[in-house]
Image (cartoon, rainbow, N blue to C red):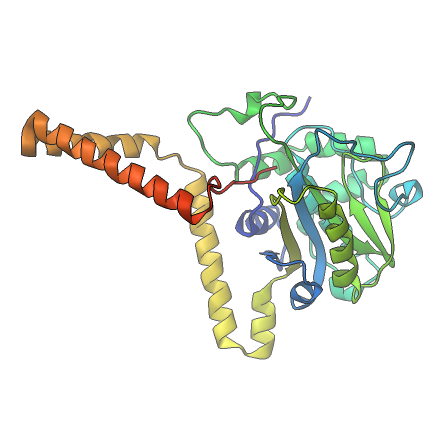
Length: 331
């Protein structure tokens, strides 16, 4: 039986180093802030995109019968060359989406430009599972200790929430889901482990992929109400430092190196919780205030803090037109 998988953030630094820690070489992720195809084309070569969206609990996930809401199921391709795995365990969809792109860009790919060195761990996993049906591939992924442990190493540390015991059927929180889009053998495929098969979206070359995939994603977003804005899109691309070295672009290289340093720092912070540290800081501040002004001085300091907070909240509400705070998305 497989162990538990924790949720991970939809973050370029998380996904980049997750693959790096699995032994993948020369691959990184870039967050896309627009659905303009040119923004994706600029990152060429692009291996695929990872799309995070709110899982629709109030509407059908498929059309009636054996049809997706967009595109057509391609059952035969999953039985042959395309790697597609059914999702058999909660919280694994982020890593599963990454692998859905990655394991279809190996040395067996048709396009030389988009072949990826996936490393010995994932090569062994692909060789072992490629002849299995999608359900068994999903079980093999769920039971892979090395992939699960690497995935879980990027989960945020929290002293209050145990992700391994969270009820996946709990409807008190919005659920989010990762899926992948990638061109394969001249066709654009949507790879979603919650669907029964890969979904074909028609002919697609490496060159036409940015325009084709953006059209599909725009149609998917249009199925939501105008108020729903919680989407995230990440592109899997070749390490941009390689391009910088090939072009001799020193500024781009330094910018990318600094980005990697920032990602490493942020990933290190995710592994720690700072509740104990914050508690000690607050205790020290309270002791200092009591020592400085006694109990009356302490009460005055607390009252001033409350007034400042109320004022700050009111200013924030005015600035955002009454909207709430930022929403963090995880899958």
